[in-house]
Amino acid sequence: MNFRYCAALLFLWFTATGAVAQIEGSVTDESGNDLNVAVPVMPTPQAMATPAGSTDVLGRQIAEVIAADLKGSGLFKPVGPGGIRAIGNDEVTAPQFEAWAASGAEALVQGYVRANANGELTVGCYLYDVALKSELTRQGYVIAPRDWRRAAHKCADAIYARLSGESPFFDSRIAYIAESGPKNRRIKRLAIMDSDGANHRFITNGQTLALTPRFSPDYKSIVYLSYLGSRPRIFIYDVAAGTQRLVTESANPTFSPRFSPDGKTILYSMAVAGNTDIYRISANGGTPQRLTNSPGIDTGGSFSPDGSKIVFESDRSGSQQIYVMNADGSGQQRVSFGGGRYATPEWSPRGDLIAFTRIAGNFRIGVMAPTGGNERLLTDSWQDEAPSWSPNGRVIQFFRTAQGNGKTGVWQVDLTGVNERRIPTPLDGSDPAWGPILP
Amino acid sequence: MNKTATRLVMVASLVALAACAPKRKVEDIPPAPVQQEEAVTDANAGKPIPGSQADFVASVSSDRVYFDTDKFDIDEEDQATLRSQASWLAQYPNKRVTIEGHCDERGTRDYNIALGDRRANAAKNFLASLGVDSGRISTISYGKERPDAMGSDEASWARNRRAVTVTVQ
Image (cartoon, rainbow over all chains, first blue to last red; front, side, top):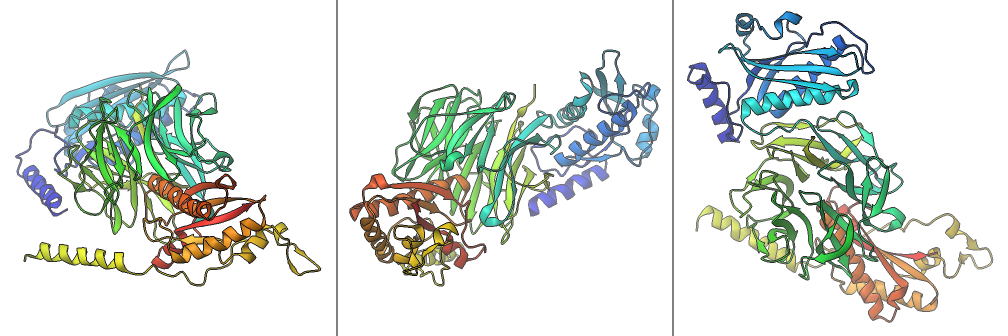
C-alpha cells in the first residue's frame, strides 16, 4: 500500500514537472495514472426515435457508459458528459483542442450516434491526444438500437487499449448468483449481467439452490451447481433455449464445475464416500477422466490459457493449498507456501498470474506467479472470496461477505489493489464468473 | 532469535495448543425443528408416534454430531450420540435416514461442500459400523449454505459444523 501511494505521488510529481509528456502509459506498473479524459455527449445529425430511445438521448447515455467504464478501470479520470460543453456535429472530427486543453483535458473522446434507414444505429468513436492535437484511434459500430451499451463498451475498450497498451475487457458479461433472504435460508438464483452490472437477467427462480456458475467461452451456455431434487450435481444451462442437462450421470454429488479455455472440456469435483477428487469430461458428455486420487479434498481447478496445465486446491498436506498439474493429471506440484490456507485458484487469461483466496484469519484476494512466489494481496476485508479474472487479466471480480448478517456483494479490484468498487446488482450477489470479451 | 522467528514460534505454539485442546462442548442446543404434521402425538399415550421424526428426536440423545474446524473425526461424544441413533434405527428397520453435512461460514464454498460430504460420510460410516445397513443411509452436503446459528462468532460456527440425521418419512 505504501509503495503504491509513493509511486502515485512520484507520478504526480513527474507530471507536475512536465517529465511525463506521453499520455500513453502502462497499467502493469502501479503508477496511479489518473489521465484526465473529456467525454462530451455524442451528438446526432438528426434526433430520431428508435426502439431504445431517441438518438440524441442515446448520445448522452453512450457517453455516460464510456465515462463510467473508464472510471471503473481505475486508470482514468473521465470528465463528462455532465458538466462539460456539448459539441456540435461538425466538431466530431475537428476537435477544439485549445479549449479542451484549457479545461485540463489530456485526452478527448468524441463520437456521434446516427439512426440508419434500416433501423440500425451507427456509433462513431474517436480518441484524441489533446496536447499533441492528434487522433489516436477511431472506430465505428453498426448495431441494433437495443445493443447501444455494447457500442459504448466497445468504444471504451478501444480507448482503454490504445491508452494502456492492454487488451480490452469492458464488452464482456458476468454470470453470478443473486442472493436474498435470511442467512439460514438464503435464496440463491443463477443470474447474468454485463460487466458493469447492466442488462441484468435472472435465469433460475430461486426454488432450487444454485451455486458457482461459469460461462462457456462462447457465452452460449452456463455450467453450474444445482441442488435440484436435493441432489447437488452440475448442469449445463443453454442460455438461448432455456433448458439444462446433467454434465454427467452419477449417484455421487458433483460440484465446482469449470470450462476449459476452448470450451470443449469441463473440470469438476466429485465426492465419493467422503473423498473429493477432480475429474474432466467432454462438454458434450462421455466418459469422465479422473485427474487426482489423493485421500484429501481436491477441488476447484482452472486451466492455464493454453489448456496445458490446471491449477487446483488440495488439503492433502493437512490444509488447503494450491497445486499445479498437467492437464492429464500428471506432475502435481504444490505452489503455495506463504502460510495460512489458500483456496479457489484461478489462472489469469494472460497466463502470468494465479488469483486465489488466502485464509489467514480473514479471507483476502491475492495473486501469485503460476510457479508460486511473488505473492501480493489485493483486498483486505472480513471475507473476500472466489476471484474471477477480467478477459484481459488486469481486473479481478470476487464476492465480499459481511460479518454477522452474511450479506454478500460482487466487487472488483485491479491489480494495484487500489481501485476497488462494488458492482451494482439488484439483490445481493456472490460467485461472480467473468466471461471472455464478446465477439 | 529475530522478531519474525519469534512470532513464527508463537504461532506454531498456538496451533499446537489448539490441536491439543479438548473438543468444545456445544451447550444449549435448541431442539431440532419439528414439522407440524410430525408433531402430532398419540392422544392416548401423550408421546410422539413411534417411528416418526418426532419420535426419533425424542428418543436419541441428539440428532446431530459436531466437528472441530476443518475436521471430520467422530469423537467419543459423537459416538455416544450415533449409538443412540443406531439403537433407534434397530427398532425401526424399515426407516431410512439422510445425514446432512454442514460447515461454518469460514471456509470457501467448494471446499465446504467437500468437507460437509466428508462429515456426513463420517457419521454414516460410524452408524454402519454399529450394524445399520448403509443402504438405509443417504448423505447430502450443504457446505456453508444452511447455517443453524446465525452469528459470525466461534459459538455459532461450532454449532454450524455438524452432521444432522433426519428420518426419511
